[in-house]
Image 1 (cartoon, helix red, strand yellow):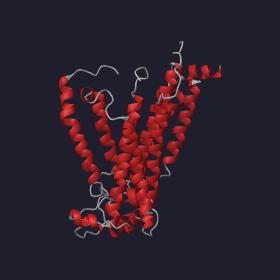
Image 2 (spheres, chains in turn yellow, brown, cyan):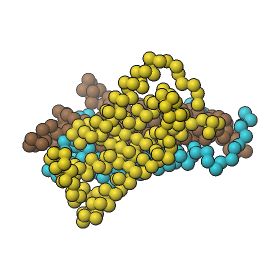
Image 3 (cartoon, chains in turn brown, yellow, orange):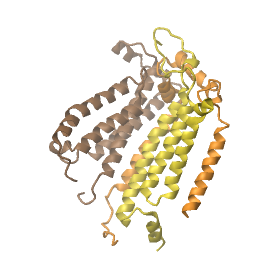
Image 4 (cartoon, rainbow over the protein chains, first blue to last red):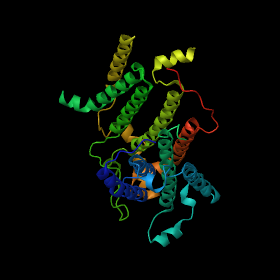
Length: 154
Length: 125
Length: 98
């Protein structure tokens, strides 16, 4: 790996201000995906850019070695995201509806727990957007990691 | 004349962008520039769909005050369907670019060049 | 070879510009894309799904199969990059001569 660019102000701002802001904004976009512009795809892209920014400024070299998030963890996260989506669809079938028909899944207990008034469909949409978020974010980081890998230092 | 231009300009700009992307894919010899051309082509198609989803007097397709009993009229919003299609198309575009760049990295490692004509000669041998 | 490319591109550009004259004018509320299928989505979002964001409602509920396939595409792209670029089980080649 090449030596990261040694500009302390840029590094400081990016590491201590920009990256936490991007992570919080990604989670906000994910959670408010039904009531404001946002959703799983956008949140995944923002979250992946936060992680890629950490990679770019080389901030992870001091803390976790040169690897950062290990590749098996990323692959497991991507598979988990896809699995959440598929299992939600099968769950709807188990409750007697069509595949991906979230209205049949009983999720009202979560409404009472959170003190909100949402339909089953809104809750099901939120769950599959969580799956999309995991899949998109981890796949984008996988692609960046593999493209920026140096074959000699393997 | 002004009306015609203001009505047609988004389509003309889109078609020009499309041809620019096509030129980068056909006329350039570097494989990396071909991928940039692919991305320009894709951006042109996305812009075409988004400009087709416009509706006069329409606003952002988010229903305000839904939980307090507001009744939305479809005429108040821009067409949401092309937005959905293009949202997924953008992500697929990123995936396509990632796979194409990974192929380029392999080609660069094997042959040491990304020039199309040199690569064709090397493959023929 | 260069002039052939440019001639072809000019021909394509003329063809596309000619084709735009058949398209409905911009932001026309009566264009086919705006009167067909999208008003139903807005009404069904209010009555069936009850979330404010119509785009999210279409993405995750009406077109759930589409988004499922989309997620598969993303996942497959990640796997493809992993298989193309991972160096496990590949013998070291000599660096190219040129």
